Every structure is written in C-alpha cells, then in structure tokens.
Length: 246
Figure 1 (cartoon, rainbow, N blue to C red):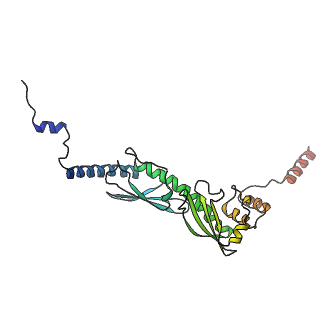
Figure 2 (figure 1 turned 60 degrees about the vertical axis):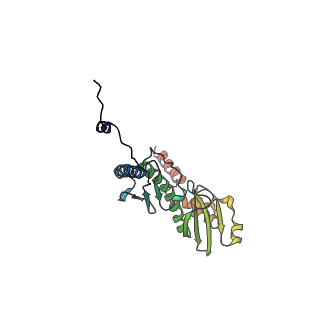
Figure 3 (figure 1 turned 45 degrees about the vertical axis):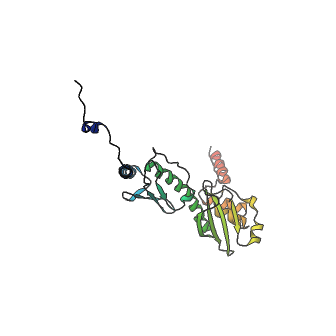
C-alpha cells in the first residue's frame, strides 16, 4: 500500500529555503558569523609570528611584532564572508598584492601572507633608520603613490642641511632608488650615480654620492662589521719559527 509522507517528514531530510528575501539575508548573515567564528578561532590557535589582540563578531585585530615596530592589522568581516573577501587595513598595506581571496581561502592564510609582506617592509625601514648613523635623519616614510611596491623616504642630510627624497624597492632596498632628488638641485646634478653599489648599505651609498667616502673607507667599515683581517706577515713569521725548530 502506498503511503504519502507529510511535510514534517520532508522537512527532516530537506533543508527548507527561506520564503522571502529577508529570511534569506538572515540565513546568509548567520552562516557568515558562524564561519567567521570558526576561522578567527583557527587563526588565534595557529599563528606563531603574530597575536590576535582583539576579536569580535565583525573584526579581528592582529599585532605583528618585528624589528622596527609592531604592525597592527585590522580584518573586518564582509557581509557574505567567506564568499566575499574580508576588508583589511593597516600601515603600508596599499602596496600589498600577494594574495587573491576566494571562497576556500582562510583568515590564517591571509594573515601569514601579510606578515611576510610586513617583514619585507620592516627590512627596508631598518635599512633607512640605520642611515641615521651616517648622518641622514628620517623625516618621512610612506608608500610611493606612483609605485605601490616602493617606499617613499624623505631624509635630512644633517651635515649639509639638505633634504633627500628617495623611492626604494621593497624587495631590493639596496638597489639604486627609482627616484633620487635633493632639495638642492645643484647637488642632485653633482651626484655620480654610477658609484652606487648595491652591496653597500643605504647610508654608505649616500655618503659616497656626497663625496665623503673613498673605497678604502668602505673597506674599513666592512672590517668593523665583523670581518677578521689576516696578517700574512705574522703567519709567515710563525711558519719560519716552526721550520727553525725542526
């Protein structure tokens, strides 16, 4: 005998779709919040190079401590997360393009990519700050609006009371700047840019452009950074003493 199943049985096996747009929006919102909670919990448990300092239903704040400063990343849940990418903000992030979000992506993956990016930024900032020991004071530092993969740096050459503007490649900060300009136009014209050496630090290269350094000075600086000089005469004298003993 055939029996008809009533609605309650079908409802048990089948997910009932919302009957109106408002109910559908509520269901999407609920699913988004649940997924956000799952992913922020995973993020907090998996990250090792950063920490989640604050988290709620709509936003997570991640602190990334590096050599020059603590970078703060704010991630905001989108309305249809995770199908729609979350919004994120933070210093220097205008140049970040290392990650393309899709529905299978996770907040952990995004945070790790941004951390890698901040490490590259941190290396450049450290290079710039170390130039202060060579007499170049940091006045301003931010993203290059024309080239988002470069940092725009303004330095004061204290000895000459001049201002230098440089655009440095984030991935290769010791290469010759995309832009190099001095507040004294005559000084800019006098720079011998062919003397720039990508193996040397920024401060050393700037001193070289100003004519303050000769190559012997640079070699001496390298030795001070940790190279141990070998005294060939002492070695030869010691060898002679050994031969006489024999």
